[in-house]
Length: 437
Figure 1: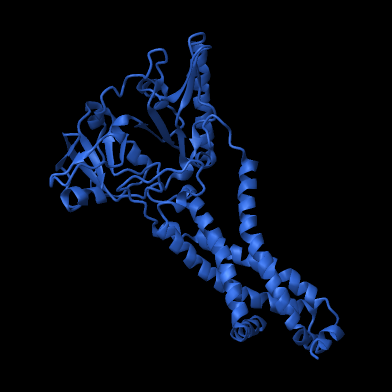
Figure 2: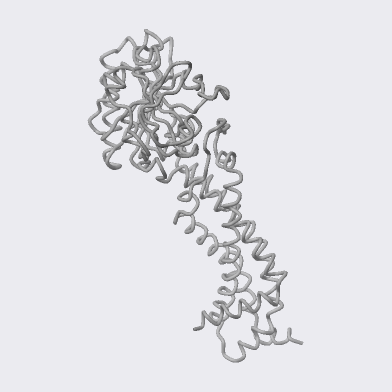
Protein backbone atom coordinates (compact mmCIF):
# COMPACT_ATOMS: atom_id res chain seq x y z
CA UNK A 1 0.00 0.00 0.00
CA UNK A 2 2.86 2.36 0.81
CA UNK A 3 4.40 1.88 -2.65
CA UNK A 4 0.99 2.49 -4.27
CA UNK A 5 0.73 5.74 -2.32
CA UNK A 6 4.21 6.79 -3.44
CA UNK A 7 3.31 6.15 -7.08
CA UNK A 8 0.12 8.20 -6.78
CA UNK A 9 2.08 11.04 -5.22
CA UNK A 10 4.67 10.81 -7.99
CA UNK A 11 1.95 11.25 -10.60
CA UNK A 12 0.60 14.26 -8.72
CA UNK A 13 4.06 15.86 -8.55
CA UNK A 14 4.58 15.12 -12.26
CA UNK A 15 1.47 17.19 -13.12
CA UNK A 16 2.46 19.98 -10.74
CA UNK A 17 6.05 20.30 -12.02
CA UNK A 18 5.64 19.66 -15.72
CA UNK A 19 8.82 21.41 -16.84
CA UNK A 20 11.00 19.54 -14.35
CA UNK A 21 9.29 16.25 -15.20
CA UNK A 22 9.68 16.79 -18.94
CA UNK A 23 13.39 17.63 -18.65
CA UNK A 24 13.97 14.68 -16.33
CA UNK A 25 12.17 12.23 -18.62
CA UNK A 26 13.92 13.47 -21.78
CA UNK A 27 17.35 13.39 -20.08
CA UNK A 28 16.74 9.88 -18.84
CA UNK A 29 15.41 8.82 -22.24
CA UNK A 30 18.55 9.96 -24.04
CA UNK A 31 20.78 8.08 -21.59
CA UNK A 32 18.68 4.92 -21.78
CA UNK A 33 18.38 5.21 -25.56
CA UNK A 34 22.13 5.51 -26.19
CA UNK A 35 22.91 2.67 -23.79
CA UNK A 36 20.24 0.49 -25.41
CA UNK A 37 21.68 1.17 -28.86
CA UNK A 38 25.08 -0.02 -27.65
CA UNK A 39 23.48 -3.09 -26.03
CA UNK A 40 21.59 -4.00 -29.22
CA UNK A 41 24.72 -3.60 -31.35
CA UNK A 42 26.60 -6.10 -29.20
CA UNK A 43 23.53 -8.33 -28.92
CA UNK A 44 23.34 -8.58 -32.71
CA UNK A 45 27.06 -9.37 -32.85
CA UNK A 46 27.04 -12.00 -30.07
CA UNK A 47 23.60 -13.51 -29.51
CA UNK A 48 22.19 -16.56 -31.32
CA UNK A 49 19.94 -14.96 -33.97
CA UNK A 50 18.65 -16.39 -37.24
CA UNK A 51 20.33 -18.09 -38.99
CA UNK A 52 23.39 -18.06 -36.70
CA UNK A 53 21.64 -19.80 -33.83
CA UNK A 54 24.77 -21.88 -33.04
CA UNK A 55 27.09 -18.97 -32.37
CA UNK A 56 28.07 -20.23 -28.90
CA UNK A 57 29.19 -23.52 -30.48
CA UNK A 58 30.97 -22.15 -33.57
CA UNK A 59 34.75 -22.00 -34.03
CA UNK A 60 36.73 -20.82 -37.04
CA UNK A 61 40.14 -20.87 -38.67
CA UNK A 62 40.30 -17.76 -40.85
CA UNK A 63 44.00 -17.76 -41.77
CA UNK A 64 47.41 -19.03 -40.72
CA UNK A 65 51.07 -18.14 -41.06
CA UNK A 66 53.40 -20.18 -43.29
CA UNK A 67 57.03 -19.30 -43.58
CA UNK A 68 60.71 -20.04 -43.76
CA UNK A 69 63.66 -18.02 -42.50
CA UNK A 70 63.39 -15.81 -45.62
CA UNK A 71 59.70 -15.67 -46.52
CA UNK A 72 56.46 -15.64 -44.57
CA UNK A 73 52.91 -15.78 -45.87
CA UNK A 74 49.77 -15.03 -43.90
CA UNK A 75 46.87 -16.53 -45.80
CA UNK A 76 43.95 -18.90 -45.60
CA UNK A 77 44.19 -22.66 -46.07
CA UNK A 78 44.51 -24.56 -49.32
CA UNK A 79 42.32 -27.39 -50.58
CA UNK A 80 45.12 -29.81 -49.73
CA UNK A 81 45.07 -28.59 -46.11
CA UNK A 82 41.32 -29.26 -46.01
CA UNK A 83 41.81 -32.81 -47.23
CA UNK A 84 44.90 -33.58 -45.13
CA UNK A 85 43.70 -32.37 -41.74
CA UNK A 86 41.38 -29.33 -41.48
CA UNK A 87 38.10 -31.11 -42.33
CA UNK A 88 39.01 -34.41 -40.71
CA UNK A 89 39.31 -33.35 -37.07
CA UNK A 90 37.70 -35.57 -34.44
CA UNK A 91 36.50 -32.91 -32.00
CA UNK A 92 33.82 -31.29 -34.17
CA UNK A 93 30.28 -32.27 -35.05
CA UNK A 94 30.45 -30.50 -38.42
CA UNK A 95 33.30 -28.95 -40.39
CA UNK A 96 32.62 -26.63 -43.33
CA UNK A 97 34.93 -24.78 -45.72
CA UNK A 98 34.22 -21.57 -47.61
CA UNK A 99 36.33 -20.23 -50.43
CA UNK A 100 37.43 -16.58 -50.33
CA UNK A 101 37.97 -16.25 -54.09
CA UNK A 102 37.69 -13.29 -56.47
CA UNK A 103 34.87 -15.15 -58.22
CA UNK A 104 32.52 -14.17 -55.37
CA UNK A 105 33.34 -10.49 -55.86
CA UNK A 106 33.19 -10.54 -59.65
CA UNK A 107 30.13 -12.61 -60.45
CA UNK A 108 27.12 -10.97 -62.07
CA UNK A 109 23.64 -12.26 -62.77
CA UNK A 110 22.08 -11.61 -66.17
CA UNK A 111 18.31 -11.41 -65.43
CA UNK A 112 15.91 -12.81 -67.98
CA UNK A 113 14.03 -9.52 -68.27
CA UNK A 114 17.26 -7.79 -69.39
CA UNK A 115 16.96 -5.06 -66.77
CA UNK A 116 20.73 -5.04 -66.39
CA UNK A 117 23.40 -7.22 -64.81
CA UNK A 118 23.69 -7.03 -61.02
CA UNK A 119 26.09 -8.42 -58.44
CA UNK A 120 24.60 -10.65 -55.71
CA UNK A 121 26.35 -11.14 -52.39
CA UNK A 122 27.83 -14.60 -52.96
CA UNK A 123 29.27 -17.27 -50.72
CA UNK A 124 31.25 -20.24 -52.04
CA UNK A 125 30.83 -23.10 -49.64
CA UNK A 126 29.84 -26.77 -49.17
CA UNK A 127 26.73 -28.67 -48.03
CA UNK A 128 28.01 -28.81 -44.42
CA UNK A 129 27.56 -25.03 -44.26
CA UNK A 130 23.77 -25.54 -44.05
CA UNK A 131 24.20 -27.87 -41.07
CA UNK A 132 26.05 -25.17 -39.10
CA UNK A 133 23.73 -22.30 -39.97
CA UNK A 134 20.02 -22.99 -39.42
CA UNK A 135 18.54 -21.63 -42.62
CA UNK A 136 14.85 -22.17 -43.14
CA UNK A 137 14.29 -23.72 -46.55
CA UNK A 138 11.12 -22.41 -48.16
CA UNK A 139 11.58 -24.82 -51.04
CA UNK A 140 14.09 -27.45 -52.09
CA UNK A 141 17.24 -28.35 -50.15
CA UNK A 142 20.99 -27.64 -50.13
CA UNK A 143 23.20 -28.79 -52.97
CA UNK A 144 24.63 -32.23 -52.23
CA UNK A 145 28.09 -33.70 -51.68
CA UNK A 146 27.89 -35.19 -55.16
CA UNK A 147 27.09 -31.74 -56.55
CA UNK A 148 30.18 -30.44 -54.76
CA UNK A 149 32.40 -33.27 -55.99
CA UNK A 150 31.28 -32.91 -59.60
CA UNK A 151 31.39 -29.11 -59.66
CA UNK A 152 27.83 -29.00 -60.95
CA UNK A 153 26.28 -25.54 -61.33
CA UNK A 154 23.75 -25.80 -58.51
CA UNK A 155 22.76 -22.88 -56.28
CA UNK A 156 20.84 -22.06 -53.14
CA UNK A 157 19.26 -18.61 -53.33
CA UNK A 158 17.44 -16.40 -50.83
CA UNK A 159 13.78 -15.48 -51.09
CA UNK A 160 14.56 -11.85 -51.99
CA UNK A 161 16.82 -12.98 -54.86
CA UNK A 162 14.16 -15.48 -56.01
CA UNK A 163 11.58 -12.68 -56.21
CA UNK A 164 13.99 -10.52 -58.18
CA UNK A 165 14.81 -13.31 -60.64
CA UNK A 166 11.48 -15.13 -60.96
CA UNK A 167 8.91 -12.87 -59.29
CA UNK A 168 8.02 -15.60 -56.78
CA UNK A 169 9.49 -18.03 -54.24
CA UNK A 170 7.19 -20.89 -55.25
CA UNK A 171 8.05 -23.60 -57.78
CA UNK A 172 11.49 -22.10 -58.23
CA UNK A 173 13.54 -25.28 -57.64
CA UNK A 174 14.84 -26.66 -60.92
CA UNK A 175 14.66 -23.35 -62.76
CA UNK A 176 17.84 -21.81 -64.11
CA UNK A 177 19.39 -18.36 -64.21
CA UNK A 178 22.47 -16.92 -65.86
CA UNK A 179 25.55 -16.15 -63.76
CA UNK A 180 28.56 -14.82 -65.67
CA UNK A 181 26.74 -16.08 -68.78
CA UNK A 182 26.67 -19.65 -67.45
CA UNK A 183 23.44 -21.48 -66.49
CA UNK A 184 22.94 -22.34 -62.82
CA UNK A 185 20.14 -24.55 -61.50
CA UNK A 186 18.27 -23.59 -58.31
CA UNK A 187 18.53 -26.38 -55.72
CA UNK A 188 16.78 -24.57 -52.87
CA UNK A 189 15.34 -21.30 -51.62
CA UNK A 190 16.01 -20.09 -48.05
CA UNK A 191 14.55 -17.32 -45.96
CA UNK A 192 17.10 -14.54 -46.11
CA UNK A 193 19.07 -13.55 -43.06
CA UNK A 194 20.30 -10.05 -42.36
CA UNK A 195 23.60 -8.66 -43.58
CA UNK A 196 24.25 -7.94 -39.90
CA UNK A 197 24.86 -11.71 -39.49
CA UNK A 198 27.88 -11.56 -41.75
CA UNK A 199 29.31 -15.02 -41.08
CA UNK A 200 26.37 -16.62 -42.88
CA UNK A 201 24.89 -13.86 -45.02
CA UNK A 202 24.71 -14.10 -48.78
CA UNK A 203 22.06 -13.92 -51.47
CA UNK A 204 23.59 -16.70 -53.52
CA UNK A 205 25.28 -19.87 -52.18
CA UNK A 206 27.34 -21.92 -54.61
CA UNK A 207 29.55 -25.03 -54.37
CA UNK A 208 33.14 -23.77 -54.25
CA UNK A 209 34.06 -26.34 -56.91
CA UNK A 210 32.47 -24.13 -59.60
CA UNK A 211 35.55 -21.90 -59.33
CA UNK A 212 38.41 -22.97 -61.62
CA UNK A 213 41.63 -23.72 -59.73
CA UNK A 214 39.94 -24.02 -56.33
CA UNK A 215 42.18 -27.01 -55.48
CA UNK A 216 45.49 -25.31 -56.32
CA UNK A 217 47.70 -23.70 -53.64
CA UNK A 218 48.56 -20.03 -54.00
CA UNK A 219 52.26 -20.86 -54.05
CA UNK A 220 53.96 -24.22 -54.69
CA UNK A 221 56.50 -23.49 -51.95
CA UNK A 222 53.79 -23.78 -49.28
CA UNK A 223 51.23 -26.47 -50.19
CA UNK A 224 48.86 -25.42 -47.39
CA UNK A 225 48.55 -21.77 -48.48
CA UNK A 226 45.21 -21.14 -50.16
CA UNK A 227 41.91 -19.29 -49.92
CA UNK A 228 39.75 -21.46 -47.67
CA UNK A 229 38.46 -20.62 -44.20
CA UNK A 230 37.07 -23.42 -42.03
CA UNK A 231 34.14 -23.25 -39.62
CA UNK A 232 33.50 -25.89 -36.97
CA UNK A 233 30.38 -26.74 -35.00
CA UNK A 234 31.03 -28.31 -31.58
CA UNK A 235 28.82 -29.72 -28.85
CA UNK A 236 29.91 -27.37 -26.07
CA UNK A 237 32.80 -25.25 -24.77
CA UNK A 238 34.64 -28.36 -23.53
CA UNK A 239 34.69 -29.85 -27.03
CA UNK A 240 35.72 -26.43 -28.38
CA UNK A 241 38.79 -26.49 -26.12
CA UNK A 242 39.49 -30.07 -27.20
CA UNK A 243 39.26 -28.94 -30.83
CA UNK A 244 41.81 -26.20 -30.20
CA UNK A 245 44.19 -28.69 -28.57
CA UNK A 246 43.74 -31.11 -31.48
CA UNK A 247 44.50 -28.44 -34.11
CA UNK A 248 47.56 -27.26 -32.19
CA UNK A 249 48.76 -30.86 -31.95
CA UNK A 250 48.33 -31.17 -35.73
CA UNK A 251 50.34 -27.97 -36.10
CA UNK A 252 53.12 -29.37 -33.91
CA UNK A 253 53.30 -32.66 -35.87
CA UNK A 254 53.30 -30.90 -39.25
CA UNK A 255 56.08 -28.55 -38.16
CA UNK A 256 58.17 -31.53 -37.00
CA UNK A 257 57.46 -33.38 -40.24
CA UNK A 258 58.47 -30.41 -42.41
CA UNK A 259 61.22 -29.03 -40.19
CA UNK A 260 63.70 -27.10 -42.30
CA UNK A 261 61.19 -26.67 -45.14
CA UNK A 262 58.47 -24.44 -43.67
CA UNK A 263 56.66 -23.73 -40.42
CA UNK A 264 52.92 -23.25 -39.83
CA UNK A 265 51.32 -21.18 -37.08
CA UNK A 266 47.55 -21.03 -36.49
CA UNK A 267 47.99 -18.87 -33.34
CA UNK A 268 45.00 -19.25 -30.98
CA UNK A 269 42.69 -20.68 -33.61
CA UNK A 270 40.18 -22.22 -34.03
CA UNK A 271 38.59 -19.13 -32.50
CA UNK A 272 35.15 -19.04 -30.90
CA UNK A 273 32.57 -16.65 -32.31
CA UNK A 274 32.68 -14.50 -29.17
CA UNK A 275 36.45 -14.06 -29.42
CA UNK A 276 36.16 -13.23 -33.12
CA UNK A 277 33.86 -10.29 -32.29
CA UNK A 278 36.44 -8.71 -29.98
CA UNK A 279 39.62 -9.86 -31.75
CA UNK A 280 41.18 -7.21 -33.94
CA UNK A 281 43.82 -9.48 -35.50
CA UNK A 282 43.87 -13.27 -35.64
CA UNK A 283 47.56 -13.36 -34.77
CA UNK A 284 47.06 -11.51 -31.48
CA UNK A 285 45.45 -12.65 -28.27
CA UNK A 286 42.34 -10.94 -26.99
CA UNK A 287 43.09 -8.53 -24.15
CA UNK A 288 40.05 -9.23 -21.98
CA UNK A 289 40.80 -6.49 -19.44
CA UNK A 290 41.28 -3.90 -22.19
CA UNK A 291 37.84 -4.81 -23.56
CA UNK A 292 36.29 -4.61 -20.09
CA UNK A 293 37.90 -1.19 -19.52
CA UNK A 294 36.72 0.09 -22.88
CA UNK A 295 33.14 -1.09 -22.43
CA UNK A 296 33.10 0.06 -18.81
CA UNK A 297 34.25 3.54 -19.82
CA UNK A 298 31.54 3.76 -22.47
CA UNK A 299 28.83 2.75 -20.00
CA UNK A 300 30.24 5.13 -17.39
CA UNK A 301 30.10 8.07 -19.79
CA UNK A 302 26.58 7.16 -20.92
CA UNK A 303 25.34 6.89 -17.32
CA UNK A 304 27.46 9.21 -15.21
CA UNK A 305 27.14 12.40 -17.27
CA UNK A 306 23.30 12.30 -17.40
CA UNK A 307 23.21 11.21 -13.75
CA UNK A 308 25.20 14.29 -12.70
CA UNK A 309 22.84 16.60 -14.61
CA UNK A 310 19.77 14.89 -13.20
CA UNK A 311 21.28 14.92 -9.73
CA UNK A 312 21.58 18.71 -9.87
CA UNK A 313 17.94 19.00 -10.90
CA UNK A 314 16.82 16.73 -8.06
CA UNK A 315 18.94 18.65 -5.53
CA UNK A 316 17.17 21.88 -6.55
CA UNK A 317 13.80 20.18 -6.34
CA UNK A 318 14.58 18.74 -2.89
CA UNK A 319 15.32 22.24 -1.59
CA UNK A 320 11.81 23.30 -2.55
CA UNK A 321 10.36 20.22 -0.81
CA UNK A 322 12.21 20.72 2.50
CA UNK A 323 9.13 22.20 4.27
CA UNK A 324 7.05 19.17 3.23
CA UNK A 325 9.74 16.82 4.50
CA UNK A 326 10.04 18.81 7.75
CA UNK A 327 6.32 18.50 8.40
CA UNK A 328 6.40 14.76 7.78
CA UNK A 329 9.40 14.40 10.08
CA UNK A 330 7.58 16.25 12.83
CA UNK A 331 4.73 13.72 12.58
CA UNK A 332 7.15 10.82 13.02
CA UNK A 333 8.21 9.87 9.53
CA UNK A 334 11.71 8.37 9.57
CA UNK A 335 14.55 9.29 7.25
CA UNK A 336 14.45 5.85 5.61
CA UNK A 337 10.71 6.20 4.89
CA UNK A 338 11.17 9.63 3.32
CA UNK A 339 14.17 8.45 1.32
CA UNK A 340 12.15 5.51 0.01
CA UNK A 341 9.37 7.87 -1.03
CA UNK A 342 11.77 10.11 -2.97
CA UNK A 343 13.41 7.13 -4.67
CA UNK A 344 10.06 5.66 -5.75
CA UNK A 345 8.88 9.01 -7.04
CA UNK A 346 11.99 9.41 -9.16
CA UNK A 347 11.83 5.81 -10.31
CA UNK A 348 8.39 6.53 -11.82
CA UNK A 349 9.92 9.37 -13.83
CA UNK A 350 12.97 7.27 -14.70
CA UNK A 351 10.84 4.41 -16.03
CA UNK A 352 8.92 6.83 -18.22
CA UNK A 353 12.23 8.08 -19.53
CA UNK A 354 13.25 4.46 -20.08
CA UNK A 355 10.18 3.81 -22.24
CA UNK A 356 10.94 6.97 -24.23
CA UNK A 357 14.57 5.86 -24.55
CA UNK A 358 13.57 2.44 -25.90
CA UNK A 359 11.42 4.02 -28.61
CA UNK A 360 14.26 6.41 -29.45
CA UNK A 361 16.72 3.51 -29.67
CA UNK A 362 14.42 1.41 -31.87
CA UNK A 363 13.83 4.36 -34.18
CA UNK A 364 17.57 5.06 -34.51
CA UNK A 365 18.43 1.38 -35.06
CA UNK A 366 15.79 0.97 -37.74
CA UNK A 367 16.39 4.27 -39.54
CA UNK A 368 20.19 4.01 -39.34
CA UNK A 369 20.54 0.24 -39.75
CA UNK A 370 22.97 0.69 -42.65
CA UNK A 371 25.52 2.53 -40.49
CA UNK A 372 24.61 2.34 -36.78
CA UNK A 373 25.84 -1.24 -36.45
CA UNK A 374 29.30 -0.28 -37.74
CA UNK A 375 29.86 2.42 -35.09
CA UNK A 376 31.79 0.09 -32.78
CA UNK A 377 33.74 -1.69 -35.55
CA UNK A 378 37.47 -1.16 -35.87
CA UNK A 379 37.18 -1.14 -39.65
CA UNK A 380 33.75 -0.12 -40.89
CA UNK A 381 32.65 -1.38 -44.31
CA UNK A 382 29.87 -0.32 -46.61
CA UNK A 383 26.86 -2.57 -47.02
CA UNK A 384 26.78 -3.89 -50.60
CA UNK A 385 24.05 -2.63 -52.88
CA UNK A 386 21.00 -4.87 -52.72
CA UNK A 387 22.00 -6.56 -49.46
CA UNK A 388 19.27 -6.94 -46.84
CA UNK A 389 20.47 -5.13 -43.68
CA UNK A 390 17.21 -5.40 -41.81
CA UNK A 391 16.83 -5.44 -38.02
CA UNK A 392 14.60 -8.34 -37.03
CA UNK A 393 12.18 -8.48 -34.12
CA UNK A 394 14.37 -10.97 -32.22
CA UNK A 395 17.19 -8.41 -32.38
CA UNK A 396 15.16 -5.46 -31.11
CA UNK A 397 12.77 -7.11 -28.66
CA UNK A 398 15.12 -9.60 -27.03
CA UNK A 399 14.67 -10.06 -23.24
CA UNK A 400 18.32 -9.13 -22.76
CA UNK A 401 17.67 -5.71 -24.32
CA UNK A 402 14.71 -5.02 -22.01
CA UNK A 403 16.75 -6.18 -19.02
CA UNK A 404 19.57 -3.83 -20.02
CA UNK A 405 17.15 -0.89 -20.27
CA UNK A 406 15.62 -1.72 -16.88
CA UNK A 407 19.04 -1.94 -15.21
CA UNK A 408 20.03 1.39 -16.73
CA UNK A 409 16.84 2.97 -15.35
CA UNK A 410 17.51 1.62 -11.86
CA UNK A 411 21.17 2.70 -11.94
CA UNK A 412 20.25 6.17 -13.16
CA UNK A 413 17.67 6.45 -10.41
CA UNK A 414 20.21 5.44 -7.77
CA UNK A 415 23.02 7.63 -9.11
CA UNK A 416 20.92 10.74 -9.67
CA UNK A 417 18.47 10.66 -6.75
CA UNK A 418 20.11 8.90 -3.83
CA UNK A 419 22.85 11.40 -2.94
CA UNK A 420 20.84 14.69 -3.18
CA UNK A 421 17.87 13.12 -1.38
CA UNK A 422 20.07 11.76 1.40
CA UNK A 423 21.85 15.09 1.91
CA UNK A 424 18.56 17.01 2.03
CA UNK A 425 16.94 14.62 4.49
CA UNK A 426 19.90 14.89 6.86
CA UNK A 427 19.01 18.50 7.63
CA UNK A 428 17.31 19.00 11.03
CA UNK A 429 13.53 19.43 11.34
CA UNK A 430 13.88 23.03 12.53
CA UNK A 431 15.82 24.00 9.41
CA UNK A 432 13.28 22.24 7.18
CA UNK A 433 10.31 23.91 8.88
CA UNK A 434 12.05 27.29 8.77
CA UNK A 435 12.17 26.97 4.97
CA UNK A 436 8.37 27.04 5.01
CA UNK A 437 8.38 30.70 6.06
